[in-house]
Length: 183
Image (cartoon, rainbow, N blue to C red; front, side, top):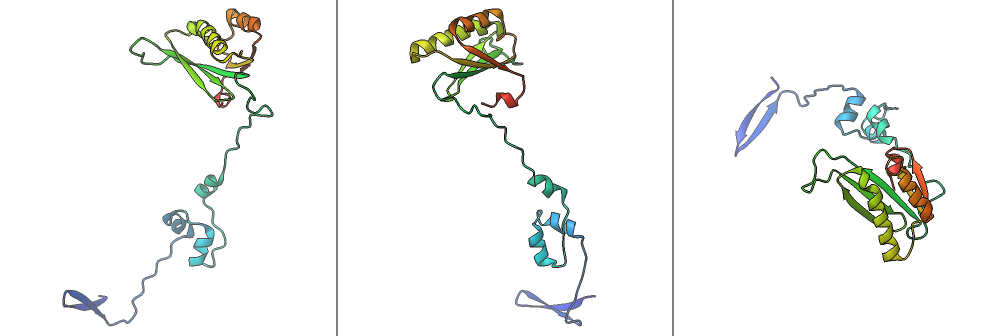
């Protein structure tokens, strides 16, 4: 028994034979660290001055950073339509109400303007690109100088390559990875 008590005006008063009742439990520092939300070593040392180090895998992983992926020396283009990126997406598991399963995007590098065209089949890419190219020439009075895509077969077709060559467009391709798709 710790003690006895009595009630007075709605409050309970505890009377104990011992003036100080002490209960002591020792927990490992790493458990305290976790329970306090992964507090820093300096904060824990305020409570336990003898603590010299703390090994917490979660805290070490949190401090890791991923290196940024540099665009190299190229940087961003310096004029409109000097570089256009393109990618085909699809097929979608669910078709649109009009039966589209794919889309192609054209991203102008300088302004970051994006054009998206829906396609029912990947084979439509060439005709869509020719229309896009004509729109750029008519609306902006410039021509695409460099075109960047992955190695999708539709971009590498002889029709597509001949058109680009005839128009003086340099076609750059890259391997199919997510890192190369970051524009």
